[in-house]
Amino acid sequence: MKEKRIQTDVLCVGAGIAGLMAGIRAAEKGARVILAEKGHALHSGRGRGGNDHFWCYIPEIHGPDLDLFMRECLKGPKLKTMQSGTASRVLRAFLEKSFDIVKLWDDWGIPMKYQGRWEFAGHSFPGDVLTHLKYAGRDQKKIMIQKALDLGAEIVNRVMIFDLLKAGDSVIGAIGIDTREDSLVVFEAKAVVLGTGCLDRLYPPPTPAWMPSIPGNLTLTGDGRAMAYRAGADIVGPEMPKRHVGPRYFSRFGQATWIGVLRDPQDKPIGPYVTRPHRVYGDMTPEVKGVYLEEFLKTGKGPVYMDCRGISEEDYAYMMHWMWHEGNAPILDHMKEEGIDFRKHPIEFQTYHIIPEGKIWINEKGETSVQGLYSAGDESMGGISCAATFGWIAGDNAAGYARNIPSGGVDAAGLQISEKRNRLEAIESRKEGPDWREVNIALQQLMQDYAGVVRSETLLTAGLEYLQRMRKKVDQSMVARNRWELTRCLETLNLLDLGELVFSGASARKETRGLHIRSDYPLTDPVMDGKEIFVKKANGKPLTEAKKA
Image (cartoon, one colour):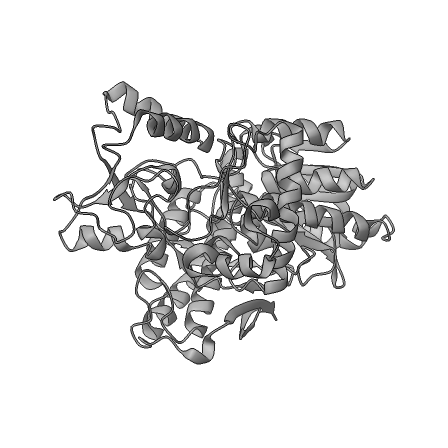
């Protein structure tokens, strides 16, 4: 296997919204920047298709009292889009900077106003303060990529970074593979920003034919979380599940973009918040309880339909405009082909699979608990607005940190590089054994059966034992027949690490809270209010601790 060596000041792992914003800001600060993307930057991440909601604080809209706005954001389900256990200082840092990012994007050519005004709608209860700005994000990635290139940042496509390199307590670079050519790529970096996106493929999908739980998210496998954990960073809340709703068997949620009411087969609203379509508020019922639609189906009261019947032509045009920018073009195309009109035909919605909420812990500077390592995006704070804002913050601080670090540190990682090379060559050289699909399917089934919607100490103990046994066999037998399969194998190995964190965190949280349901601890423990489960690698094993973030 050939070896390439690339030197830079700041390495951004992942060229999604968070990575691009980190790279742009670091380049502005004078740092040499490389963005490494295992796919292609134009088509990677959850923001590739667009978006239409940006969570932000605009003083001229929300008033001068940021504390009041923060209290609104911390109420009810709105904090779901933030890092589990986000400290108030991190939330404050995000909100204080969010309007600056809105104005930047607008200046760059991403339309952040609607008909000349700041337009807020969605993700809020009727009568509450509106927190999400509507914006036209269809071309956001194209614009940000050009901005990064104009500032001198280099984008390295089709290179999967699969592990970090350390010297002592500091990150000094990363190691990856070219997903097309037979070569190892070693990055020497003074600072690293992780922005590899959400965690998918750990639990079974809605349809067995798809490997990813959300169709289209095949490559979003929490790689950054796994790398950070192995490097000694704190992972917070890996046990907490998240569920979302969206059109049944489709690949895009977009629940807040729909102007409609969720109804049962008898046309009765399933929730108390809206009884007719409302273009500003929408139906917040599934944001209060993500599994509500699934419960309807299981009890025989379903299906549940998003009913947009009766909306005005103006509201229909408004919804179609935002659906296009939100990335729902495939749904719109399908409905057109099938002759389905949202104004006449209710659309069945469903609760999607489990997505683990575990994040890389960060502070208000985007720093992780490991020296020289930063994180932004879905790995640390969910949603495009958080990815954009903390990508910028992390890039700014990473560039400042790199300015004081000498070059040449990666020479101390020779043994690490050799060990990782040997592991790759072993996977590629095997003639027989399970491929990544077999391993991933087995893992999904194990996670569903032993750390699924209901958990207990006996289930978690047995599941963790099975996972560890499976891991030993996989390390000795998994096969890759080409570079594409090798990339999927490395993702699956990351998923095995992250599955272990779910079991460890779920065992440590001896209570029922949110969608983490312990049949042996059915009560929510007030002692755990405000605390999170932190997991850190110690002596090769996950060490858990309950503490305030």
